[in-house]
Image 1 (cartoon, rainbow, N blue to C red):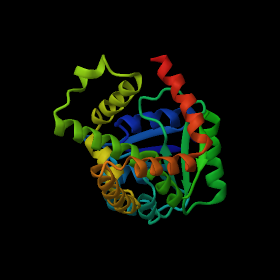
Image 2 (image 1 turned 30 degrees about the horizontal axis):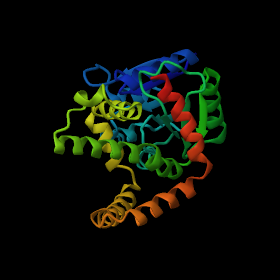
Image 3 (image 1 turned 45 degrees about the vertical axis):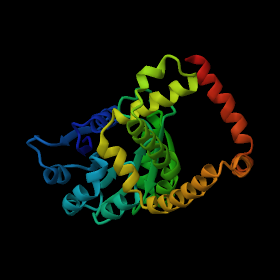
Length: 274
């Protein structure tokens, strides 16, 4: 008898993507979503594996509402949220084995081989975790195992800072009335890359991008640091203190070490392909 995977939010882009992955593994897949006849509660009761694939900004709220329906100890409860700590804390209130997932690729990503997929085991039997890990590895995924805390701290650098930087750049363009298309053709390759990423982020769902910034448990520490650092730079820029600005630049450059040289070479490859 085939095991059943139930995906809450299974008609969405990521939910549909993971439905395809589980079907390739040989599972039967059922879904619940807005407008489906099947409710989330019924799906949970019928499923051997439950996957929450819901908007990040609503994930904790939806999980809190539905997780009490998971009453079987042999059930596996998973999610595909971009953040993990708060989500896993809620999923741990189920009776089943809990594993958080975070695909480090978008729903339009077609290549499976060597694509990175984070696994955050929580209250989970070791044997169950190893079996699930092997299933995804067999499809071709590279599994990165982290705790929820490690994951969310890493996402400050991997997601939060890049998203915040791009959103602030967009805010400045709006403030100064800059039309990116007007300058795109005469821009340097680096400018074009930057503009492309600004456009890319602002073409996406606002809820996801803002939730990545606001809902990370470590956002407050970053915002405090940014506030203090911005004030430091404001003083130096208003004084036109090139010497101290250069010193700060050099200290960061020294901290990054050989990474900067490697990154320069890699970015040159990207730019030269444009």
